[in-house]
View (cartoon, rainbow, N blue to C red):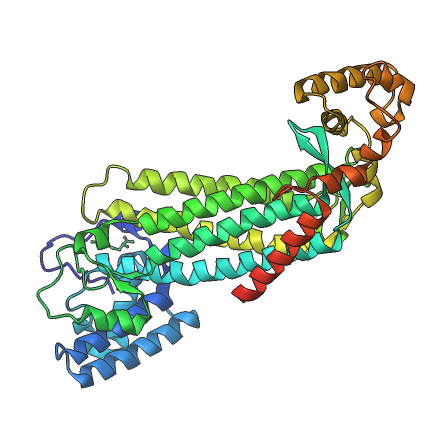
Length: 461
Ligand code: ARG
């Protein structure tokens, strides 16, 4: 330890403060398994092309195996002197395998090495997140199916608007998470590109078989431009932006769960296991999980700002600034995974207060649009019907009634065309049933959407 790979050119030791300042080992040690796997593929390719001997490759492979074990057993001491995970692995390999370790870095730079490690890491994590999103979608569909007859007020401007099925509301989130999963799947295509062999920036003079390295590491393709390979982080930026959008969906859902579980709404009760109490107010039961997911959205969006600002204005090719890419990436992966997983566990632990939701759907003139529609069916132009319904609402408000509390005679003040059949027309059941346009909240539509989702999820298994 202590000796730097670049010491040939330097006559002074690195200042201790600089070592601390430039070190990234605290963060990038997370990549050790990928770093070693990448090195094994690299040395196998070097041996295959006769750039190192098979004996050397065997010694390096064995040594790297021991280094991996050491790190996973927490037996390797990390030090700022060795800067990052790449230099730690190489130095530990020297301790294990001796001088041959110095051949491993032939035709390679930490610049293509770190790009490789980050892509390997992100491939694995994106796949895990895709699985997590599948599980969340599944739980949502199960919940929608379980509560398929529950009616709730649908809102615009946070004001009661029209009745909807609770299942329809849940399936709206299903759609959002479906697109989130698709965005992850799509970004994966661009992460799944193998940069090793780009070396520092210009490629290398050694006859590297990059196609072999790609095959060994299971990448879909080899990168096509060495300068691009070592200097862009768009795969991270793309992942974090997809993650931010997903977190924003989770945050909106969280906001609703917080509202719905309040005494003011009382639409749902979140189980004790997923809430916490107050240290001072004995009656409290707080929706902390939802609140924290909402709060953690800020971190992920912050990570997005960090990485896109990091990359802005960086000239080609590698710049040390880019070492700062890992904290936002790792934090985004960890945060998103945790939030998706906790939602998947929490949702089945929510009790739905069907009666309260129904009661709320019957107050606040949620059937005013339907009264207008009723008149349209009887031949009144919609704008006129809207006005008649509006006047009926104003009258009902004045008299402290709902539209369905008015008598036929009262209705007739506003239109002769209103008869006693209006009451059935304005019932919740009929209002829901009539919304049969594709994507609407009609019972059959929602049932069909649930069936379709079940099939899609099964097909994707
Ligand atoms: N730790 C560095 C990073 O994360 C690795 C590449 C360093 N390359 C260099 N030439 N200093 O970006």
